[in-house]
Length: 283
Image 1 (cartoon, one colour):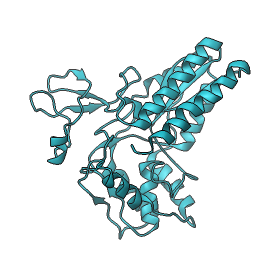
Image 2: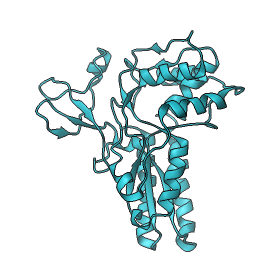
Image 3: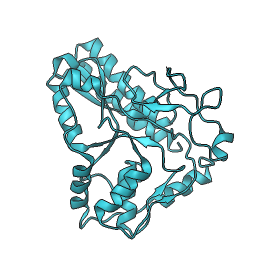
Image 4: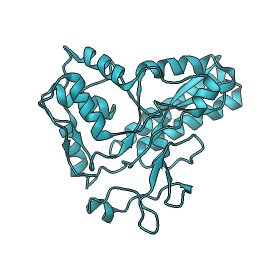
């Protein structure tokens, strides 16, 4: 939320440069790595059973530590799996740039007759992920902290729900998207389709690495641009691609832990949080 020019340059302009070349040198198929971040808040059900989108949480609510999304009557909304049909709600510069990247590719594909598929990846994890970059994903951040003997730091109360998918399943989805003519022109969720709290994923990461002496730390802080709940409806991936996740979270974490042995990580999380605080982006 503060490296605005760099995010926009890399994602928006970088994609435009590539697409300009492809317009005169077309390829057989294009798969763009989109992101779940474009949804903003996921989909919810109200107390009457109606499905609805959520309003942004107010600053006053966040300062009071009231984290859950509520309806106009003050009743908490229940998060449900988010399908591709949910309208985007762009809550961060990153989300805006990823939506722009996705739309650029789909527009160019349709215009120049290049079969193009946008895969909306949810929280992806696995071996060879950058451990010293605090913006590569929550699970790698947790792993970096644990490798340095420090507790994973969790925003809000840790009960926000997310969806995690192995990089091996993501790679397989990319291949299947390239090989499935019926996927052209679509945006498709890729994830496990299973909701899990951030606190639970932190605890399971610590356990997989074998550091039972470390407990995740709940900060009770809100970070600008964060949403409360979002996890995937993967029905379209199953229907169109014939894809479904094959790597369980337990298997994926074991695989990640094996790779982490012998790895070193520079924990830049504290530095990143200091940047957010200095700019008033953390409550």
